[in-house]
Length: 99
Image: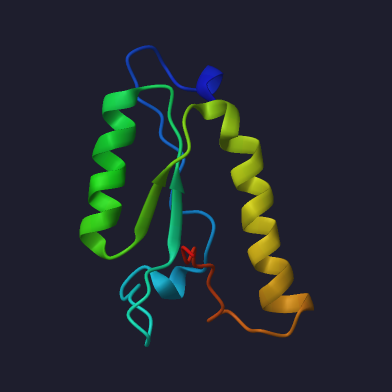
């Protein structure tokens, strides 16, 4: 992923693990916020995008460098599995509740 970007470009992987429907209004009925992993090899860029995601209403989670990008693609596929094959529809979203 990083190799495709020109020098000086800060690459961040985020906003791809849920449907577009959740972008405009992420807050859920119970007040929970959808989990939004954020990955980048640039710590500052990662923090900026995580702060933006938090401000927009997501539960931003710093997952480290771009070595996590492939796993985030799998997370997006997992969302699709639940939404389509699992019959939950595009409104399904992942949350991370703490015990």
